[in-house]
Image 1 (tube, rainbow, N blue to C red):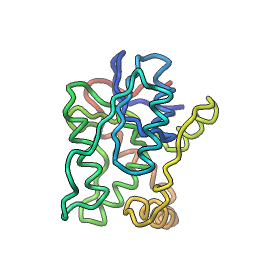
Image 2 (cartoon, rainbow, N blue to C red):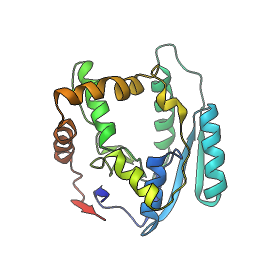
Image 3 (spheres, helix red, strand yellow):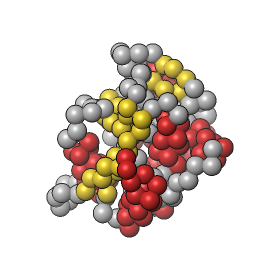
Image 4 (spheres, rainbow, N blue to C red):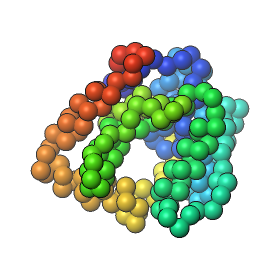
Length: 203
């Protein structure tokens, strides 16, 4: 069962990477909403392949953003791509849904804790909202498989040179040995960050 935090408008905009999380959300929300997709091209080979995949399937309802400056020396590649992506999102005056899930929240909490202060991914960042934070990634994967939803794999997600991947593949399995209920702990923190506009609904 996929849970939604907050109330969504009938016409929605989804930040879509072409991966299983966002493609499952697109399929899930297409049942009751008019869906528009927002894809940001990071200038990588995987990003090019994802863009072509989305153009083939959703050309009529697809907006595409692009990198508009060089990376600063004080930015990691992850920071650079995120900064460029959110700068583009914030240039719109409509709510944009991202497909962050509970596993993302756990990764962010561990990452931020190792840097001094544990925090979860907030429900909103200006016009960007994250209504799917209570769901495990496996929920999206199961939905996509049951509904025969196509998606594209990002092979860079397995590369440990990116810190989030290192946390995902190396640190979290060990953290779960210490506390097997870690996702439950973080889900309680997510629930404390409920949107004020509405409660939780589920489908």
